[in-house]
Each structure stands twice: as structure tokens, then as C-alpha cells.
Length: 154
Image (cartoon, rainbow, N blue to C red; front, side, top):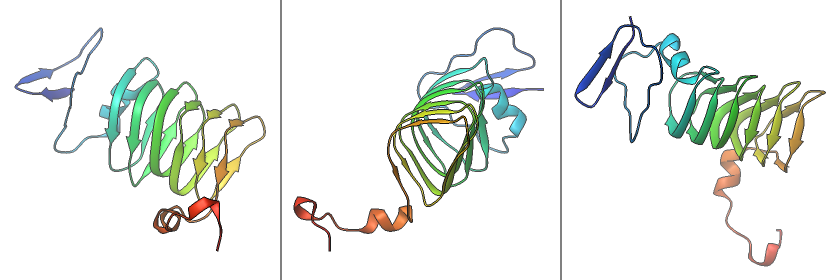
């Protein structure tokens, strides 16, 4: 049985049609992968800022920003237009926006990324499309470096 609490209303049971969220939706307690798959399956269209713990796969349409210390998979049916900041990212679908990953980014066959990638590890499979620039190295260390005037290097 599905149960989603939104403000003071509770929706229980099976749902047909569309479910629309406006504003901030917080789900407390244990959220299972099945619950998240309802929000991010290929028929979904979500717009906003997404923060989560654990691994998540988006297989629908998502616009906004994604932040997690854990893993994100952009499914093969996904169209994502977002700034992504994650522990690791595997792209199988389409992404427009910059990706920053603490551990690694993998672009699988058939994926399309238009944006910059910053990660210590980047793999691009044959048949993947990447239109942007990549920066490799420790992402956390890069954030700590001071700005250098006039583009000089020391």
C-alpha cells in the first residue's frame, strides 16, 4: 500500500492519474526504493531541488538540482536538466547541466551529456556523447584552492 503525507492530507492506496507537488515535500521515516521509483519512473516529470541519502535512479524527466553524498543513476529513458552534485553518477540517458562528483562519473553507451563534468574519475563508453569540458582531480581539494589573480599559476 502506498502512503504519501503532504501537509495535513494523507493519500493511501492505489492511485491512477497524476500526482502534482508544489513547494517542498518532505517524507519522514523509511522510504523504500519502490516508493522512490513511483516518483522517478519513466512517466514522471519532476521539477525542483532533490536531496537524498542512499542510491537513486531517475528514469523520467527531472529539472532543477540534485544533491547527495551517495549515488545517482540517470536511467536510459531519463531526460535531466539539472545541476548535479553527487558522490557518484552513472549516466545512461540524457543530461543537460553540470555534473560534480566526489568519486566518479560514468557515461554509458547511448548516453548524452551537455555540460561540464568535475570528478576525480571519468569514464566515457563508446557510443556516449559528451559536449562540455571535464576537470579531473580531487573535487574537494579543488574547492579549497584560493582564486589566482589574472589566471596565473603557482
